[in-house]
Amino acid sequence: MRSICFAFLLQLLFIGAFSQPGSKARNLKTITVSGNGYQRGLQHGQQLKKDIAEVLVLWKDDLQSSMKMPADSFIQQFMSGTNFLPAIKKYTPDLLEEVKGIAVGSGQSFNDILAYQLVDEYWVYQDKLSNDPSHHHCSGIGVPAMNGQPALIAQNMDLESWMDGYQVVMHILPNGNTPEQFVFTSAGLIGLNGLNEHGIGTCVNTLMQLNASGDGLPVAFIIRGILAQKKSKNAVDFVQHTKHASGQNYILGTVDSVYDFEASGSRVVRMQPDLSGAVYHTNHPVVNDDIKSWYTSYYQDYLAGKTQNDNSELRFAAVKFRVTRADVKDDQLIKSTLRSKDNLENPVCRAHLPNHAGFTFGSVIYTLSGKLTMQVTAGPPDESEYQSFYFKK
Image (cartoon, rainbow, N blue to C red; front, side):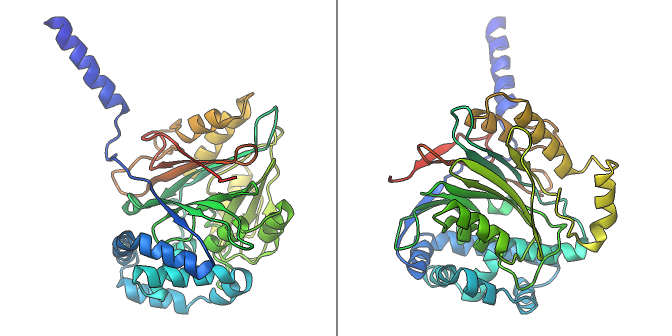
């Protein structure tokens, strides 16, 4: 009897050690869209109509809570104070049509669906009030092809907790000049990161400290603009020569190479890989000094080595340590890194926090050559296994 009780106690301890408070079963939704921009958006909206209606309610509740004003008033104020449409029409006109299609297919207003795409851009507005980028948490990695291993890019995409349950993989079928793509996103959004059939992919990290531009191209449209490219050079040029709306880091993978670009509203600066060829990033600028005035003294202290305890810097150090010390840089190393919690208060892998400050919405690993693959989790990667998606080719 004593041994049975002891065994039961061990079982309880084992379950407790590996269960996460606040974790829940997540259904990774998948949709397939095809045709021109409007047709893709229409199919997206129709297939996810219920989810889009639900998530927009949650989004507006969050806006009202954080901005201390009615959500519709904030959206009107935000949209009238910015001018993103000319850049969207110039650089990615088919994506504007896709947004229109999502609105029609889901039965939502175009203005709401367009504003919903501008995640980083309304974060810029929010952070004008608080001067605090601490609630932005994403960790990215890029490894070039080496020692027989294919090139990989990867990311933990960290977002607000209310978005949980709306994770989506969007499979875009080839059409005309549009390549086949796998895009990780949320219901109603055109994309958070992704990979196309030509081995071109991107992962992103918010850099709220960098200066923004009220008439640049928003982040979601940059991401999909990259994925629309068929040649590596064109993808690199698109990042470097497009006017950016928000401070953002782009880890760009192109078949066998990886790049890292820190983009602000007026300049794009490449962060060179380390000696192993790898790149990694979190949520503070490292090489781009086009920073907001309130961040100047903090940035100078960081360069001087006086500031090392920020959440982003601790995650950066954790990712750097794990990636650079490993001889074999494969997807298993990346998975263990994205699941890591070396600093429990500032982990790379973020489960739901008691204060609802955010969590790892999903984790992705893209294989850029050989058998092109998207590996993705719905929610934190320590709570679920990666699911794999492959291109038709």
